[in-house]
Length: 148
Image (cartoon, rainbow, N blue to C red; front, side, top):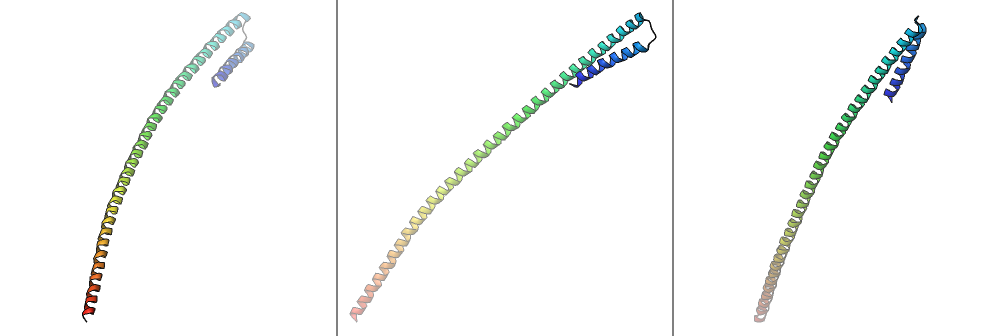
């Protein structure tokens, strides 16, 4: 939009300048028309130059922006892939640790179960021995009382 406004302004300025020169110049009509044609041609050439320069610069900036946006998209894509890979690694690591904890808990439960069973058997044996000892002592006391 700025280029278009500039070109219109240049064209209007050239026309006003040429008109002013015509009105103020003490020249014959033929000379004046010739100069006006020259000035119009010069103004048209400059306008064409400005237009071409504006298009070239616009294309350069468009290509530059396109290149930069492609680079940014590539970097974002690479970083997204890296983040995704890190998440997968952490997930696998946590799964592995959870499996290890589960296995350790199962082993501990089995060990405790075995220890409890063994302790129960030892306690049962100990109680049985104590009961037998008490029965033996009672029988000895009964024997001792009978003999008295």
